[in-house]
Structure formats: C-alpha cells, structure tokens
Image (tube, one colour):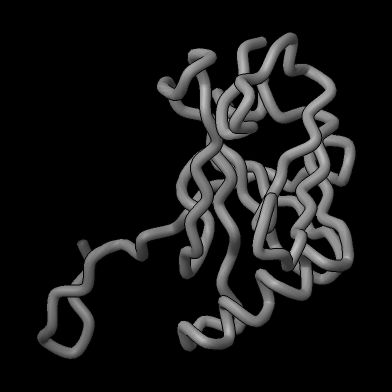
Length: 130
C-alpha cells in the first residue's frame, strides 16, 4: 500500500488475462448481434460474454453463459465479430474450435454451441460429453 496525500491507496486490482483468437471460439453474426443487444440493454456496452463448461446435464457437461463487465484473472479473451468473449483455462480445453450461433425462433431457438470436441450430446441439445 502506498500513502498518497494522506490517503491509503491499495495496489490497483490488475487483472491478468491472455488474448486468444477465433481458433478457441467464434461467434456467428447472429450470435454477435444478440450478445451486443443484451450487453447494451444491461448498460454494459464494453462488457464481455463468458462461456464456461460446467458439470451437469444429461450427458455430464453443460455450457454456462453470462454477461460480465470484464475478464477475470487467468481468462482467455477472444474478440469475434466485434464481441469480446472470455473463457477460463479449464473450459478452454472443452470449447476449442467451437462456434456459438443464435437462432431467433420459437422452437429450437436461442444460443447453440457447435462443438467439434463433443463426443455425444443429449437429445435436448443442452449438454454433452467429451
């Protein structure tokens, strides 16, 4: 900590992340449009889309997506179609080469991950195994 003009100032909370490219994950134009609209609606036009893989679902693994203000420590940041996407190192093992698409439809609509690493997926399309 440093003393500046009588005030205690903590060392800045620097975030350490790596830059990746679309070989990790890429967005289609449709997905990028939807994410941009969602970020703007939430008042975070400079925010990021977090894509993670967590345990669960019918096949053992499932995707989790969240809008956040910025990357976290150790994240990998990819810019695709003008959208910043972050992936933690563990999830990167499962999503490498994936494409995120968005379909605006009543049936089978929403975000879909086209993942070449998925060995099997369940019938609902929400989970996979690698």
